[in-house]
Image (cartoon, rainbow, N blue to C red):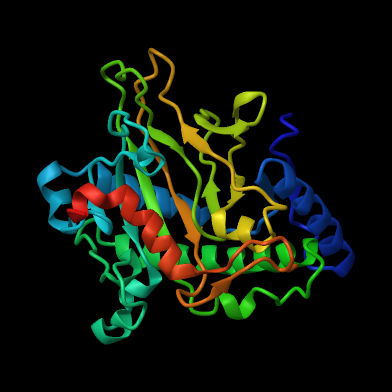
Length: 320
């Protein structure tokens, strides 16, 4: 098994002794790769299966029907292509990917969303929901709630691993501006262009990312300094979790937010795939600064910082 991305069993997290052991393993993983795999998570298999079934039904609709929920700026609802590596100033072909995304804040009123920062931000947009399949919106809403609950407990375990009170992060995520996204990788009918990925190299911006592993086909890779790209084990029924840039900042870079990518399938594998990451982002107005002062790092306002980073990726769509 890949010790760079360890497996952590959460089934004992209902006891203090179990939480202490889990926190210890989690902290070690976040100091090395910033990635770990969780089993014993308690998320309903029925919910996951419904989530993947309804999401696949949407992506396999004719293009014209998917385009009905393509948001103007291209950062909420449906979008066809994006070049993830844009933020890294890498000139690469577009990713081999279609996406759909929503935000819990996208269900708020126009007035409430307008108060979520005086700058452009995707969480300030109303969600664009497809009319078909009929169960798409309620299924996504239910899955978002379950992922947010899981992420909140993982953050409590992170706090314990960092030697602070388990509730340290609670009031920093009680109005979170998170995002749920689905990446649809169409059947690979033609060879990819040189350097073309299903998702190009990038790190995530926020606190935690939680990604369900549906099958054992793999494709997700994480970069290890000195060793290059390493496959993340694909274990059906588990979740891959990684920390983002703001979490690394909170720890004074003691924990690492690592580059990762999704490579195209091997030649001959023409199957499509779906991945559904949940990006747990803090409250937009939270000051993120190292928990232990004194390393010279300046703090940032979470929403302003994330907006700046995302603007680099979506600059073409936003005409920036």
